[in-house]
Amino acid sequence: MKKKWISVLATAVLTMGLLAGCGSSEETGAPEESSQDSEAAQDGGADAGEAAEDEGSADAKGTITVAATSVPHAEILEAAKPILAEQGWSLEVTEFQDYVQPNEVVEAGDMDANYFQHTPYLDSFNEEKGTHLVNVGEIHYEPLGIYPGTISDLSAIEDGAEVAIPNDTTNEARALLLLQDNGLITLKEGVGIEATVNDIAENPHNIKFNELEAAQVSRVLPEVAFVVLNGNYALEAGLNAQKDALAIETSDSEAAKTYVNIIVVKEGNEENEGVKALVDVLKSDEIKAFINDKYQGSVVPFEN
Image (cartoon, rainbow, N blue to C red; front, side, top):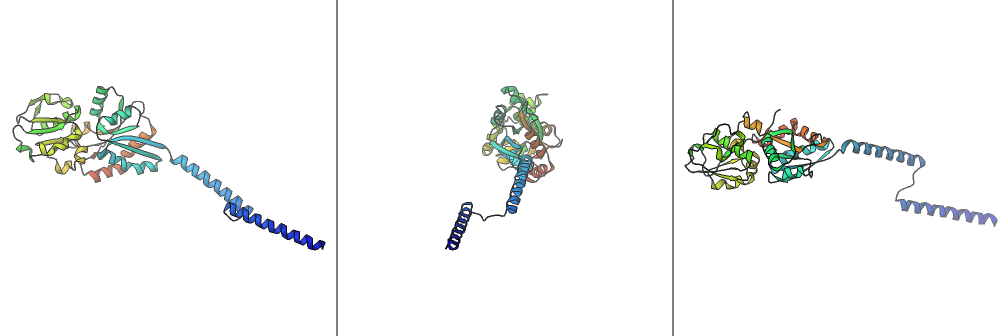
């Protein structure tokens, strides 16, 4: 009887043990592991965690924030994103449709850099607005062009014809210099990149100048004889400097060198690691090839 009781008790203990084992399995949702498997899994997990931590610390360097006009600047920055990502940088681009706000957000410290302007415009902006912005890299230039409106031949210009030009200080001068180079007007000697319509010495065709904010110039194409457009706004209007312009700045001209588009930061941030990485990528052979292939001469990489 005693033996029978012991047998029953042993069976009950074994059954409870099995039930406890099933309960543990259901709770963890995984089969039991041997001590060797468990140790191996722990070691493997630790190694994977360390590898992930090492990879994260090597790859994730930070975010670069850039203000840019849409075409071609934002498009070029988009092409730079995957290259920067390979180096551990995330690039965030905010697009603007004017030439004022991109400088204001950088001056305020809201963004790391901007990409839309050339040095004469930057210098003029700093002087007029009291800002402290500096050039940290020359990337490309966009030949300024004279485009047909109601007249498709410069030599066919009529007396009193209307020509639309940008009204900001440096781009107006640039437009007037291009018109002078093509024999439509003559400027006072020595006015250079500070020229305005008040500096026109000779205007044999009595041209009437419609001075507009740069982004608005292309919108009056059907209303005026000619327009003088910045490269980025020409592209936005579906125009190509090489194919559609009646005259453009030549690649070896002083204007092309003077009006190269630059990366700009607030003074004191010239050594920002992310911005330096951005400039290096934008000067790379990959980005130069992208610019040449996509814009076919309407945008030209700057060669230092």
